[in-house]
Image (cartoon, rainbow, N blue to C red):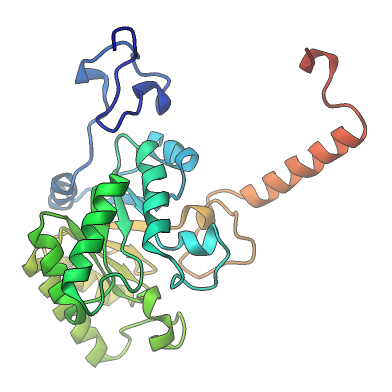
Length: 296
């Protein structure tokens, strides 16, 4: 309608995610350049590292996207950090659609990748395609991440055949925690390392656009990154890969007591938030908030 601000194809006003945008312009010049799967391939070819971080809600996605992040992963780790579950296994497709939709609404520049939850792609490739299409259509995300190699090849190929970009995930695959018996380092033995390298080459061959390697020896991760042409993103896999990913709540210090070796704390928001909350309680009880200036 005449007089309304310009909107995205999904109905979002431009002004919702970037107050610095020219709100009444329909010109695309003032829009940040969108990161795509092709962008990531070009970054690897140019030797430019890829920065990837998780987000699970609109407010955090806006902050992460505005920082210039290349990729936002809507991880099934949302069920851990947002719902308090011990593993990623309880995540449902409906919950993933909800989280991914929230992130998409808060994102303009970054490529948004969503995890396929456990139980929605293993075993039945037709069901995997149905669930993948639903996740893409109902969330608006731009790519999916699936855990596993040769054992899920048929499902990945089926999803790729529908034109859906797929990011692979090898090494420590959290959805298989019960199979592994914990979250220890993977592929330390030669036989498992050889299988991982073969799986990485297979994922490239069938058309995956990128690969996550989690918690494997850094020498092996470097070898994988040098052996395939698609970008390799590491978490606990050393610096010899094409980029890094962390859980945003972890790197901001919001999960007290969680300190794996690969995690670097870039802030201590847990302490800052606690200090702010206790000060608020004190101000309310002392009737120093609200002040006359904060009252109508």
